Image (cartoon, helix red, strand yellow):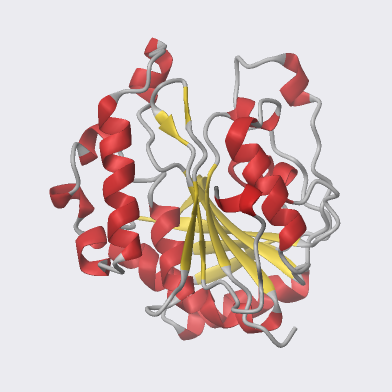
Length: 273
């Protein structure tokens, strides 16, 4: 593929997103039809975090991991049988090692719900190879940005890099069952959108101090770190499109972002409006 492939940050919300696609699922489905077919997908998710070392899924046929409990039985019957690509996993290990990240391949690891649930909407045929990369701990936004920068060369080979997290992620309030959209969710989401449009990377890296009610939007940082991975992979001069996904359960903002859009690609209005 001659065109450098774009990068995606997706809010994967609750596991029920798999069976309740809503606005966000429809946007991902439209995007999957509009994008050129990627050669492979590399995805990072906060549901695979590893101590110090980055691990890379290198199995031929990664299993669908149902890493959640207490949800409708239908979720546990879902499968996303995308093939793996061990050769790509080895290449990722080389890129990360060169960039100074300790990295190992893992032939046993499957795809957690942060990976397969959004892909279920984006590419429902599950016929594109998927390689999952862990988030090492400890990790801060600047480190996540550097991790994405190390993965950036993959885009030249038509690889879709996906940072899968959540634009807001307060599980305490999610479990409390808020019905109307909490005001802070909109305020925080709007702040992120504005800083991304203006490419104010330093402000984004300092979101914990600068963004409205950041600690409430993210009591822990894990679900926002994939956004910084995506930003790193996108490069400093990225183009950007916001795909508004609404808010589920009153507290989980479902917006997604597409970075580095090829000039030749015209996305349909159903993706971005």
